[in-house]
Image (cartoon, rainbow, N blue to C red):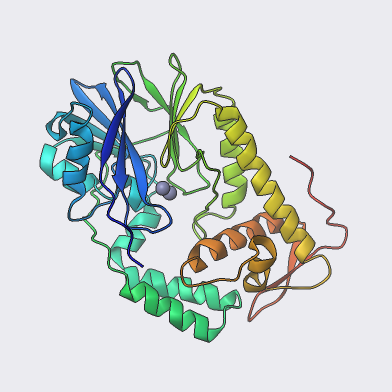
Length: 337
Ligand SMILES: [Zn+2]
Ligand SMILES: [Zn+2]
């Protein structure tokens, strides 16, 4: 299925802050945001959108709707190393000569860009180990091989983005907070005087969870800690990686945390009396089986939930080939959030 061609659109959020809504080639997620903030004698872009043949034209269109120009961009700050947030960085740097900052744990992006086939092979092996039948693996592999996304090399950041790194803007400094979980490289940026939070994919207006599997031992645990950190900032307005701005930031953070606990409880209940593979667990949590479209997304999440429950000692692995899991006797239900 091909997504309807979306166009880049721009709007002013408040003086000196602009939302650039940029098209994505995914049917379920048609656009992402880059946020332009005045500073450094020009513009600072928080995230870039994904690269495609027309991505710079769409970015320029969005900027022009705000009375801004690409040539004003002095600095790119990436919330995390997913291609919808940093994919156009290389092309923008080539066009403007600007600098780029990103957290240094972006190995997950490097691996994908360096060898997409090796990454797909590894995902297929994880899926096989998780009990996905061979016929479904073949269909998934075919579908993935047929996908064609333009990729523009994402350069190494000029400087690393670390806990406490301050990004000076005309509104005052945005302070960097490391918020791993969704991705190992994820950061949020907070402007304390205006109480603005640039949240990437950590907190979204329409609560939606995703965790990169296979890079850290417990992405779900990291994500929950990152929610606590961001909640303590008491932001007034959230500028998220997808969707509109929203002001009830605390409520969105609570809803994200509750959804994690809901999923964990559903998973524990599913394996209370019988050992199941991750593939068998998916429909019991999400009410749908794996398809080529959702396979990687849903399986990664279930594997991350399993890893978290295992860390807590609430479940144990009882079989391999495929890996099967069962709630531990005496593991007890998880505490409510
Ligand atoms: Zn992301
Ligand atoms: Zn995203």
